Image 1 (cartoon, rainbow, N blue to C red):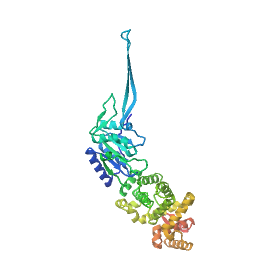
Image 2: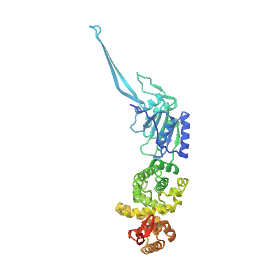
Image 3: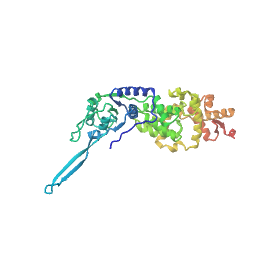
Image 4: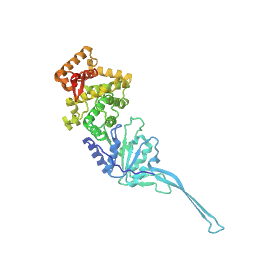
Length: 433
């Protein structure tokens, strides 16, 4: 039995760049041509194809390319037979027997779509062998579908004027795909689907993962920078962004580069997608995360109040709102103080990679000398004694310390029970009571 679908995509994300592609594709479909969406994995080709099929407003037949496909999987084939036997003994001395066998033909998706004028979405069509797709040639050009010979039906099927085909494919260098015959490509209008731009990816994260815009900016920026460092731009980073944002949102994990759980999520999702070795990819990931910490990037609710929505969408709001971000880092420090130490959660070889990444990204600051750390601690203690409590950003500005040194020193003071965090203010332990 062949199932006919009615597509109703939920929360399809439309941005100016996506809208331009949709307008072009609909223009070709309305003129009677079939289209071919070509691009790397993870760029949203299938989602876009289903959305276009919904805009065409015709029932949908969905087919997925497979190396084991045969032509019969597209047009149909013989499935069983019908037997009819007649015994005539009207004259008792004469017996007449008629025995008839008739094979049953069952239409497959392409035949049904051509006959009824449905929209055919052929996803990853170049994963099927080229000879299988030869049946599309006459259907797309001569509007005639050629069927195997049979005594029970016509060998030719006139294609409905409403029939449209939307094909998708990955580049030919991908594993498991076949070269496509030029005759078929000549009958299609090919639209190249690039990596979604940063605005589109952020909108997708906000609507699909239901995260805030500041978190979407951080995730897209992190993944883009990591892919560039590891030369992993062959595959789109959109799926990685969606995984990270969705998991963090559903489990209440702050999208902050210094958060241990967030770093674990990024490691599990991104390292396996890198084109470099595991050690090099791990080093690159920690460099990216530490760079974000240095720049004061963190996901905070106050960010949307201090920065306009347009700035967030353009990726500049997070960096310019360093003061609001600094307040959240202070909150995260209090949470980290009550959690298990990072070194107990990560495998030994990862600790080495973290230390190496921090030493290279932070220069000589990664391993401060005891004298420097002690002087920073005393300076912060003296300042808190005078101010009776201050935020992280105020301490950083007053003492002219860099972000990483301030965070590291505050962590040491909290672990030594010399200061405590109260209402987002760092105060001395003796003044806390």
